[in-house]
Image (cartoon, rainbow, N blue to C red; front, side):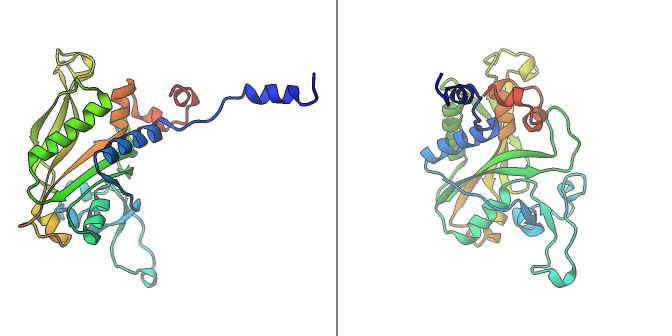
Length: 261
């Protein structure tokens, strides 16, 4: 045996590291939207109240502002304040859309993948931290049909050509009209099973036409431009694609899970 042969054999049998399933999924989602002409952008995880709530048409008395939903940060000494705005861990990636609209003129199409935080109890489908990918398109003559077509194209690329989606009325302060988007159950194909609570459909995301107040607050003339926005739960996509039954497993650091993918 050569001097270094044993060492080389030991190295060759070691397991190599690879990307976490969350990172893999975010990259795949970003890749699909990039192919569709979207720009992938990012923003700060520590936000201020204006960009996280006010500019998004969220009323002052909205439950999302309560401590039960938001991680508010302890204020700095008054001498260190630069903007006099309350700080928090962002509860969604929508503030990045606001920041983008404040500094760019339409038309544009962006997606914003990233980590968000909610001050809530954890269970199999909820955690204090999770990942979203929000999308925004603003231009002239944008309609709800453009939103539906965009989402159908995305989900067919992600889940396969046999995907069917439907839109139901829903409420979100920053869009009007707002819709809940369901996808036909990928297991039973609409017949009904335990995965879809025997309804044949799985709720997948929230979306809608950007509220005129949001456009106007960002300096975009809502009489000339329209837009649509949507928010995809990355962790929920992972659970659907890979059959995970507990979102907390994605953050446990369990290598048995990580090494499967």
